[in-house]
Image (cartoon, rainbow, N blue to C red; front, top):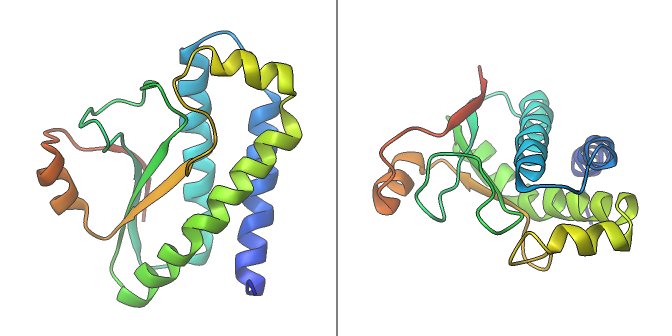
Length: 158
């Protein structure tokens, strides 16, 4: 059963994601790129309210090794989170599914089926897998293993 903090985070993410998804214009991949950055920034602000040892939260495409936020054929939002506390790292890792579910719920209650179908015409995959992936604490190892040479885009710094 989710704790009261987990429920609060779910509601905050759902609310912010719903606002963002209402603004979608179903035209281009650039629009989804803007949505990804906006949503990642909102999630970062929400997490920063509850976790006080976060050094930074960044948005990065770690799956392909690119250092931009353009659409890569999917709806993935990869958040890189660096924290100083092992306890907070563990707590954050338990939130990934909660945040992912809030984003999906907001998407499907906000965007019409027709809008979703048109959006899928631009992308290879839908919302069947995790939309939000959180890579916690192991930032430098992830960068080295993926061959990333430039840092992720910084969204929050304490």
